[in-house]
Length: 132
Image (cartoon, rainbow, N blue to C red; front, side):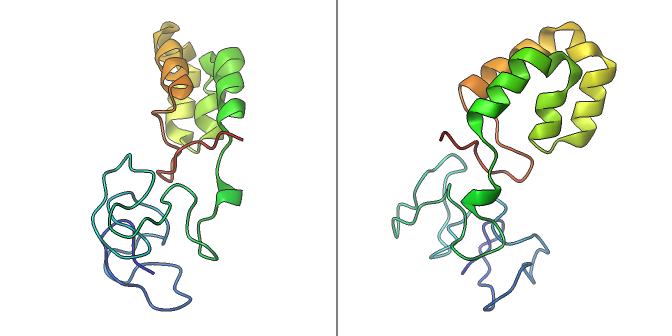
């Protein structure tokens, strides 16, 4: 298993990378299976073919912990001006700011809604939203 943040090989059963200190499974620069560099938006590793969006099998991050795309869309549409979509995706500080500014007078809410629909906004752990 390799760190998705720095590409360092991790020991068996490790939860955190010893080189960069990031929780294994987070990050988007390297493949967790072979350690080769990947594009941040890549769905699969071009070197070994391992799926990159589903997390590490049996590791700290897994598909079960991923956030649902449809839930994020509905929260953004109905409660985006209160920052609920940002809270759901793990961006607590941005959620508070969005709440206090009433969604940036609506502009920030609209931009977030469009980005969530297009599935270009990852959650706070850097994982894409899962379409179930």
